Amino acid sequence: MLGDLKIAFIGGGTMGEMIISRLLSTVFVDNNLLIIVSDPVSARCLYLEKEYGVGTTTCNIEAVQGASIVMLAVKPQVLAEVLAMLKGKISPEALVISIVAGASVTSLCQGLNHPAVVRTMPNIAVEVGHGTTVWSASSSVTEIQRSHTQVILQALDKEFATQNEHDLDMATALSSAGTGFVFLYIEAMIDAGVQMGLTRTQAQELTLHTIAGSVELMLQTHEHPAVLRNKVTSPGGVTAAGLYELEKGGMRTVISNAVLAALSRTQQLGNVS
Image (cartoon, rainbow, N blue to C red; front, side):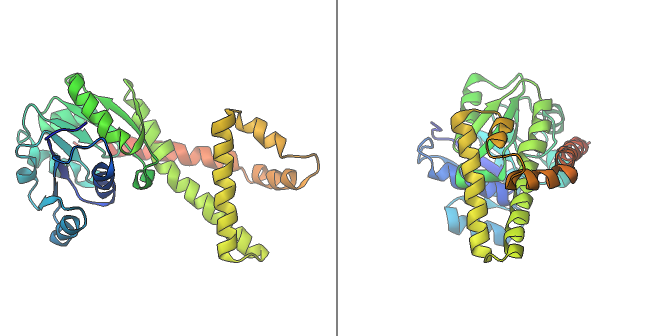
């Protein structure tokens, strides 16, 4: 449980809002929890106040005063400016949790002059409580702070701790950016259905249930995807014809290159100096 704590969100954008929404709707969070959000856009602050009943401010320094947990939820492009503004301003006993893509634990600790930092990378599925988050903590993070981190991230769904921070870069490329790749595949499938003559509604329903069913089958059977693929691929059959075109088009290579490109970009964004 998160007791009578103050959590300051630095950044009230889409991902920050999703996390706030999940925290306020989970049974693991005490009703006495105080959330304050800092965002430079006054209209955004008013929206968050009305929608979630949280406190807001346009001043980052004001937000972190007295906070037990500080959530960094800003774009990588503005991180250096935010770190410079908050350097030395966060309580020494506070925990800092970052969801900023690419920003390493070391760079965050140095940029804030603060020892207790957790780096996380949730994906967009946190909005519906099916998020996947990998996280890594600095050596100064206490057991209590680690438990607070787990409570927050479990409100988003699956959380995985790692001692190898490079895992977070890879998780960003595969799990966070990966949702965009999946949505593009879904869009292409729907468009193909429409091209064949289905209505867009029919094509979307068939595509979504096909993908959801395939995922659930793997989760329940624990079988390798190649095994399941072979089960639906008859010699000279319909699936075989389609798979031939996917392989001829280099689908595996394109997907692999997309993930590797996302990894490279994550590492570039990690330079906040």
